Each structure stands twice: as structure tokens, then as C-alpha cells.
Image (cartoon, rainbow, N blue to C red; front, side, top):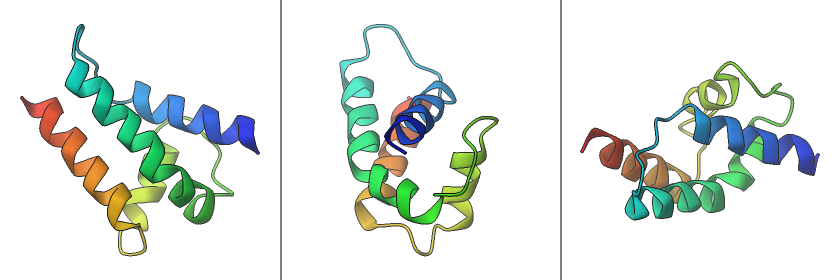
Amino acid sequence: MIIRTTLAFILIAASIPAFAGGSQLDADFQALRTYCKADVERLCAGVEPGGGRIKACLMANKEQMSVGCAQALMKLKGTKNN
């Protein structure tokens, strides 16, 4: 289970383009891993990682997502667009 969760976060992070030298982006990814871990385990436990399935699961369950995870996703989205 720990390996699947770790793999899921790696896949989520890989699905969002990273910019070299982006210390703010690195901090945002860390916040995403921290605040969304429990949501992925709770809401997407049966979802096979890969192909954007974890991200799709989180978005499908956004009404049940924790505030911290939702904020981390929004912040990362804002950083990505800058």
C-alpha cells in the first residue's frame, strides 16, 4: 500500500510539467504530497496509478477532498501557469 501511494504521488508530480530551478514549484509539490496523501488513500484506494487515473479520481471526488489538498492543487495550478 505504501509503494502504491508513493507511486501515485510520483505519477501525479510527473503529470504536471516541472521547471528547472523552481524552488517555489518544489515547495508546491511538497505541499501536494503532504496534503493530498490521505485523500488519495481515502478516496482513491482502489485506483490503479498511471495514465492520470489518480488525478481524475481526485477531481471526481473534489466535493469530498480535504481543504488542504484542494488548496495545494490550486496553488500548484497557479504556479504552473506563471
